[in-house]
Image 1 (cartoon, rainbow, N blue to C red):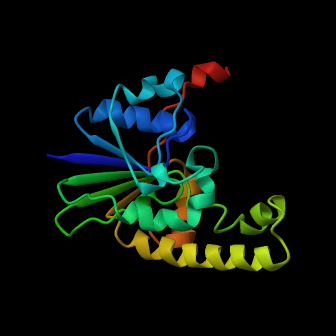
Image 2: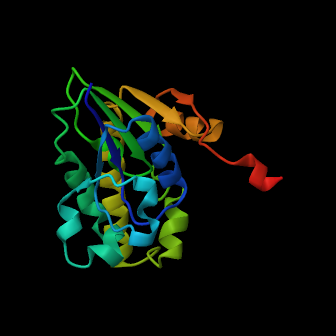
Length: 194
């Protein structure tokens, strides 16, 4: 069985990447895809020497420092990742990875950390904090976020099963996509907090 894991972007070793690390341990033969891979050499151990297949955004000017500026291109980029040779596709997503295109004979599971907060329930807060709450740039940003929301809902149809990281995220998934999800809590060293 051929498995692909698609992660939004690889730029640091944070929460979603810790979950990804566990996926890579569970599926050592899986191929790994990401829109960009700019993880510093000293933080790459979690990738276990795995090659990362990236999108065209990896090669765009300024992508290393300003990859988020390419958000309007990310739906197109993730749709260009060829998943046709895989039996199972696991998207590790808080942004666009779940939008990868799969066929009827493929199983697509999405480990959803959250629907895009900046496009949905926290849009106004994000626009305010970015100084995009008024003016012409605000109108453009709002229009782009509207288009992103339409794409986000449409691509949820291509997911065969959602996995949420908490009951709260399961409610967010239901609110945005009207899809139920199975809750699997991420691996957390609870001893570190006692």
